[in-house]
Image (cartoon, rainbow, N blue to C red; front, side, top):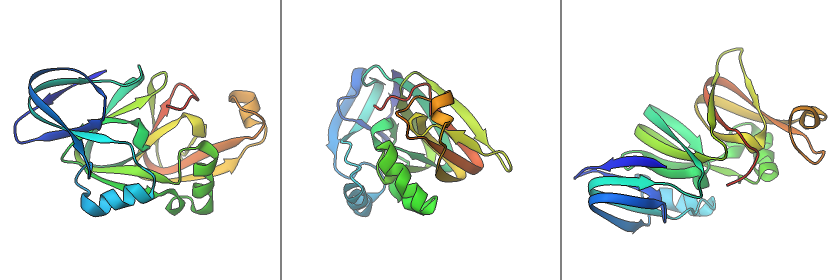
Length: 207
C-alpha cells in the first residue's frame, strides 16, 4: 500500500475502489476525464480501451491506497513522460497530463505484435509532467537503466513501464524462454533501446 497526502487546492486520481483508509476531510468522486488530458484524452482512452475507472480525490488529509495485495512502487516524474499500462496505475498526482500512445508508433509492426502477444493491448497510457505516480506489479519491482549502446532485453510478461527516450522492439527468441523464462514454446523478447529506465516486475503474472 502507499500513503498519499491530500492538500486543499490540489487533487489526486486513483483507481476506483483503491482507497483502503483515510484521515481528515477527504472526498472521493468518480472521474470522467481522468486527468489533465481533457475531453480528447478521454476519447483517446475510450478508443484505446483504456477504460480503467478512476476517482478524483480532494480535500485535506491522508489517504492509503492499495489493490489486490500487489506491490506498489512510486515513480517521481520531473517533466518527463511515463509509459505504463492503465490497469497498473494505482494513483497519481492530478497535475500530470494523461494521454495514450499507440504502441505501433514505437517499434513499428512489432510494437503492434507485442500488444497482441502480451495481452497488454495496442495502446499504453502516458503520464507527463512533475508529480508522483504509484504503479502496481506482482512480486516487487526492479529499475533497469537503458543507455546508449546498452539496450535491455525484457520478458514481455514482466514488463511494467518505461520512461525516457526509449524505443521498443519485440522479436522472436526461440529457445530463450525455454532456458531463462516460462512459456509454452512461443518465445518472444522485448528489447528497449535509447536512454531511460524500464521497470520490471519479479513475476510473469498479469494483474
